[in-house]
Length: 324
Length: 248
Image 1 (cartoon, chains in turn green, orange):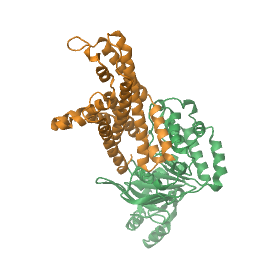
Image 2 (cartoon, chains in turn blue, yellow):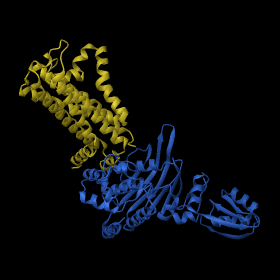
Image 3 (cartoon, rainbow over the protein chains, first blue to last red):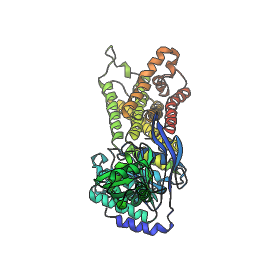
Image 4 (cartoon, each protein chain N blue to C red):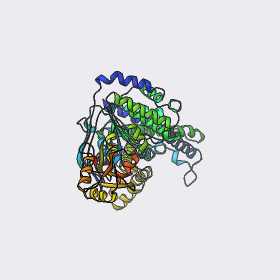
């Protein structure tokens, strides 16, 4: 992205006066017939941070985003942006930039025409379209039909559309799909530059390694329910590593207390769902000597698989781990 | 001032794909067929009485029935494809009060349908006028008759496009919307007439001939109102459907 430094500069120049918006999902439930797609879901997305939104396919991520954007209605609860429903925003395009349908383009229309339509509707001058085409590196292909674009080029066009109103909030559904490594890095840098100026960035993704590099906070849902939320670093350290000569005795003691115990080696356990202090106390009560008790940082993939297996619910704002 | 901007964006949507050119091509073909019919066509008895009077020629150049069908398909395809491709989503994000976005789209498609109707009638009149010298007859339709045919075709084109838009908004799939438009404009009216003969005066084909000055089964004003109703009812159903359901 040849012009991302320009964007950085623009962001830092406007940072002082730019409004910030907190996104709030408050007890939202959405049903399609008998299926509950989003189930009493609550979390917040803070300004000045990149919040990754994770969940397996069909977990309800896209539906939650659509409810936030008033594209779908919630059966219960409310989703707000800076305390207002999306439909109540005075200038939605200049408040929230959205990439929610990866292929929401007419294949017979050029990329430039697509952006000009959006600019027309929002009352944005066409020179902004030209600068965004440069920013996302598709200016050379701007007059080609979108149907001839690669997935990565479409994704870049979608990002240009999201940035059109230079909004302080970005809601992006799988923005990294189809981007090459350079594009991913540029996306990461661009989002980082925006959060540095206080913008709110809410990104769903199934690319766990990318989220691990990108996100400050995480919200993880499974089958429409919240399974983990909080700062990524805290969540990654939410497990404890225990080394003991009596792993079976300790395992029984910890599991009876609600912990989820994974045996790594014949005398090494990884424990989730219990605070580290409680692990020590349980071991003491069980008369088990510990050779090591330390925080364990797992990879996001490892954590994700644990969270979405349905065994653990974790909210770092409440405790180190909470089993439901 | 959001609404005029939305209309402009919707007009740009319509003119930034090849679809209008395809429909223009259809109009050219129909105009050419009219010219061919004048030159080579005959009645059952081999004569050319079908172009022998001003009334006959006005009936030949009356384009309203074609305009309604063509513009109906135009509206249905334009709107259904907008939903099918997801390009309606940015409009609802720009204007979350969906009825305003839908009305802007209806307006743009209505304008497009009116233009198609007008151009279709102009091509038809031109083709017939240019072909008549190849026969023993001249162009007999008075200026007032030509103006009525053109105006009727433009009005009916706009109404047909609005009708198609409503169907497109309800159905959202291109194939289904086209089928719906054909059902409403071609298949259903004769069936209704079979069930209730008195309805024959109020089906689109009859109304189109009335507003074109070819027949006078009802008054022109009543015909205009009835054609508007044919358009507004499906458009209103589409508007309500879009308001009530999830967008994607």
